[in-house]
Length: 638
Image 1 (tube, rainbow, N blue to C red):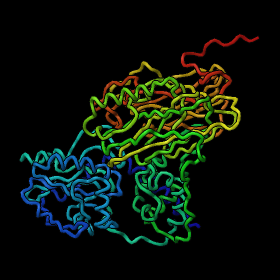
Image 2: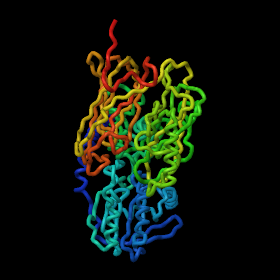
Image 3: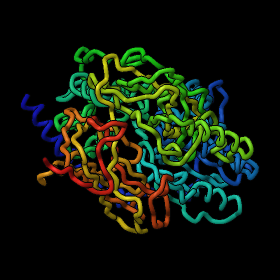
Image 4: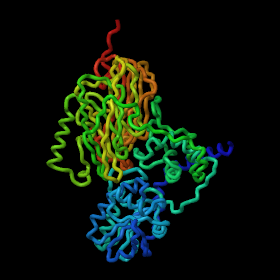
């Protein structure tokens, strides 16, 4: 017991060391770039495909350039480059350039490699680098990493394909340096390579398959698996949104160092709230579990006794709240291309209701969790979304999208941010890890007869051509509804300008409460420049209470936060929002390089600062008694 406690104390120190390493590693990476084997002739390497046919590197004669790129079908960064590498292979096919891929996962076979190549639509040959032979010769370190040889098999370049990533699993908003393409252009035109070494970013190659210990102070089956079940497997399992699975011991070992870094920096599990009231379904890993996970990684990931393992978690299959009263499904498959910017699509889902209903819960079932990032749902009673869909579909028939966008095909329409109009009401949405909840008895969301549900989908790409057809389940209130679930908003302003270069530009706004209400949920909203946001309740006597504070805003993790205990808000109170925006070059999410002045608007390249509220009151209609424009006149006391 004492040894285990000492291990956890050491793990806490290990987390601190990891934090320091993460903060300093970016500055040190450039100094650590390996130049091996640049300027050296590469020996003849041989490989074998699934049918036993052998391939030799030196058979590629009379080539102006040969690209050897190291890949892993377990690495989401590597998979995301399948289509860009296909494009380069096509672009340079007639210029005496050959691209070959080498996968480094020693658990694969030539047959499984062929299967993965087909599934990911890779058009250039890919071989298994058996026993890391090529990895060792070329000194490869990560996947994906590219090595370019000239016609004499001399290495002229090693490094990244482009600068799409600034850290593992973290993308830049824009690709500004297409390094591999530039190198190939230089070689085919007879010019010297201007930049022979760049930093490749991806998943580390474990060259030695180490013998893992069975025993240890902290073991996988006894100590680590319960933590993964409670905090990670909801998303990190086959078919879900996590970019890799954490269901087995071997998978946990493969991602051990990444898990340590992500939990120490609290980037995972993805729960952005740093302060405020208590919310349902908080995904916070406690300090003890973090220390346990770090101790396991630092202790060389011992397996332990499988008999110590807890029972497998039985994740819900199908609808988590039971069969819905009304199921709305997108009218056809939506195809999402492998590369490009994230795609936003609005789908119109007619309810065909012949009578008004109250909704007690909404459940979203993504058709393809690999690409559905999140959804937002709205109510349209005036057929506005139908008209926008008709206009959009007619437009793309006349002028079909080009490039990568041509692969995004299906029903619905695009409308920048939002759904293209001010909806009549909101129905919440879905984000990874968010579970559906029934509203308390007596409360319901009013859904008029004949209305449409409009679903805005945020799709992210994974390097594969994917299809999705998402469904929404509506659960009707079974008991009489005495209070409508209502919406409200607090705004940071509409006529603002965030100056180019500003690293910490503040925006503030307030909303005044003009009647008692009960707060049930909060959803903050900003775009790509947002960094911090805080919501404060000031009661009529001047007392302050922080409702929600996020210090590391991420546009990709927007959620509706449901209070564990609904909060009474008094007439005469004030709701304040304070936000910080980073419009500098140090913000990798900045959509402009160099930065530009940014103003209010619906497009992702514009900005917003809103806090959406959900609650109940005695006020008629669908809106809470919240006024954006001033406290208003108080009623005379009698």
